[in-house]
Every structure is written in structure tokens, then in C-alpha cells.
Length: 191
Image (cartoon, rainbow, N blue to C red; front, side, top):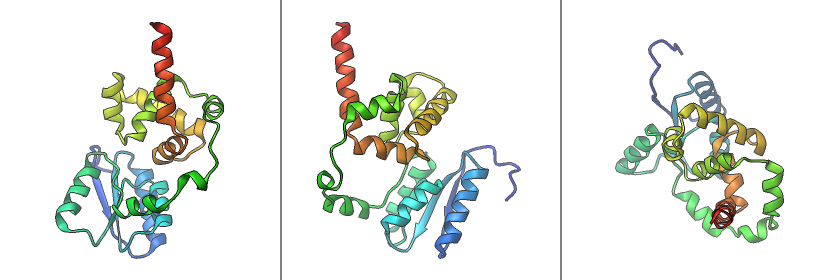
């Protein structure tokens, strides 16, 4: 692939039948074109494949059986920097009992171990909401480069590979509830 003339954001749609070739293409594009948005088309929903694709750098995982209008909308969302997951994921999550799958974490201890600053916690909340760096920068009134620094620090501190994993780490530990409670304690302490 030639990089000439590809300074702006662009969206790539990958439709390869071979799983390995598909993952290789995702990794190559994500590595060579940082601003690229990547959507992958798959024949059917597979949880392990979805995880592999997002770990490789995909922004949208789209099942081909989708009707044309939702497909177009999904591609538009990916192009705008949003993450797109298949509706079948909701069915899988609805059948899963998370309370029995993992022991209740000691959230206070895990937050202390992660050593996230208050600003990094704010950014992590935005990552959980699926915000792009541009939106996070607007929400927190900082520049986009500062958001990138915070995201890299969060990934390093949580020992995860990408934004999706960071958001999953936080949501499986009830981070948004913890963060809201800690903000309330700060507000009460300052009042």
C-alpha cells in the first residue's frame, strides 16, 4: 500500500474469507495508517473472532447478513470514529451470568494498583462510552494530543493492548460506579 495522499482519515472495509488473511490485513492497515477506520465483514458472528479483530485494531465488526440500511449506518458510524459491534453480541451477553463467572473484584485495591490519575480516570470513562479522541478532547477541554498521551498511559497501566480492552477492563470492574462515587466524595470534601 502506498501512503501518498492519505493524510486524512479514511475508512477501510475488509471482506476476506480466510481468517488469518483478514487479521493480517487488519494489523497491517492499523500499523501503517494510524488514522484509518477499519471495518470487517464476516459471514457469521463468532465471539472469539470478534475479540481477535478488535485486538488487531478493527473499529467495526459487521455480519454480512445485515440488511443494507443498517449496514450503511454501521459503516457511517465507523467512518465517524465510533465502534460498531453486532447485535448478536447483545444476545450472548444477555445469556451470560457475569456474577458467577468471576469473583467480585476488590475495586478500591485494583484502582490503587492501576495508579490512574483523576484525569486518566476521566478519559477511561470516555473510553467506556466509546468516544473518539476528538470527542474526549472536547468533553474534557484539552487538546487531542493530550488525550493520546492519557490513553497510552491508561493502556500501559492497565496492561491492555487497546481502547476496547481498557473499556472492558473498567466495565467488568464496575469502574463507572466507582468513578462516580469517588467524584461524589471529592465534591462533598470540597463543599
